[in-house]
Image (cartoon, rainbow, N blue to C red):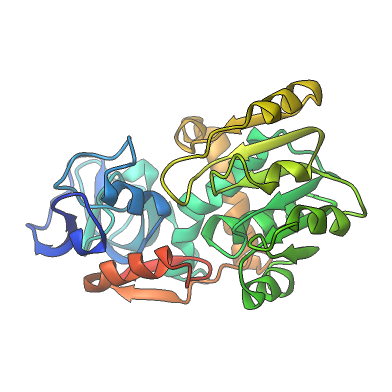
Length: 326
């Protein structure tokens, strides 16, 4: 089978198409013929060598796959060959075939395409559990930056579906801002590259600061803090540069005296509770199949073009979910 391997840490050119033996599922596992492999920002950081959970090269990137069951390991009876499924893998997604633990293979409705399905596994769950980590309550206001991206586009919609009073997104281009409002249902969208954008967020929230700020950038010294209400929760879950800015001292005091919180977020601990995970995935799949959750997955690249896909994401030219299609 063909896989994309990171032979050594570096730029997109570090992604190489290589041949590997097709694995065989062990007891309790299934082999999946991959139809779509999702790309996440963590893959790009791992490729560069600045993502601590990533293995050392050589390794195959990718956390999420959707496809068709090709063969069953011993003792697997709940799935059938030819069945459509999706699931999370550990550094093995960019490939023609992938191994899944049978209990982690999630059946896919025929109405849900493979490419958008991959968006639910990491990015959809990240958006869902970010709101849980923020102790979000219906009726609160939410600010989502990078709201045209994979996590951001879903976070805008999930916040709205879970009862947010106001959802404001940020994006760098007019086309993306129009998309955030028109397709994802945001109350407003602002240009975070324009100085003074925090005041536009406040104006869009009827002159009030927001209760929850979902931050993908790591700009701890940026304007996002200025949008945060007393008692507000700032959830920091990523960095577009692979590192976060220092938090200014006066800002730390502001968090203290205004009863605000700045919380780092990683998805992994939230996936350890099987019941909580099943509840979230069930809701996401239902919303997606009913059309309430719109997943844009038009950014599709052949497996051999993984480097080009990474370049497109890094240049912020992509919208929604980006996938490889073996």
